[in-house]
Length: 135
Image 1 (cartoon, rainbow, N blue to C red):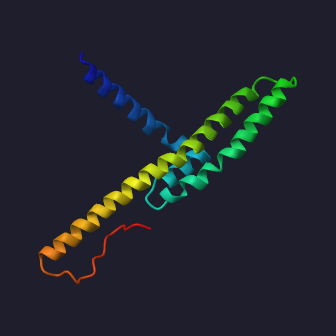
Image 2: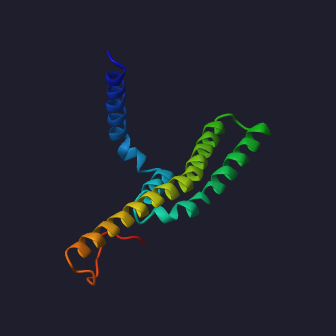
Image 3: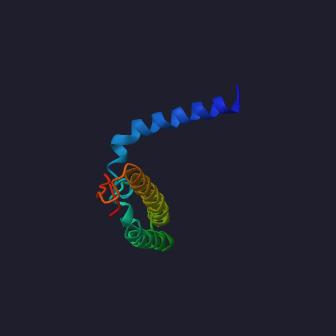
């Protein structure tokens, strides 16, 4: 079996797992925020969404302090979940900025191509309207 076949098989398995977990995935607030930010309208909210990492970091710190003072060990799992969510929120900002830059560049290229097309047809004064333009 070739490496590419293994990669394709693993990719299909991960897609199946993602589809099976979709109903549960939507219950978690960080996943819902991530989904909202990864839309065209939400890309500009990536940096403010990074601020949501602070409460998760604070919760993880409080839980680990409680455990170190003799509390039960099971809150380690909750602290780990809080740390993971904090990392997700921190990563959301830079990734949304990169995605926003890509989208705006593509929109710029589309506008430029539409303008050139209009000029080549002899209608340079026409106002061009782009669907899904930059905000």
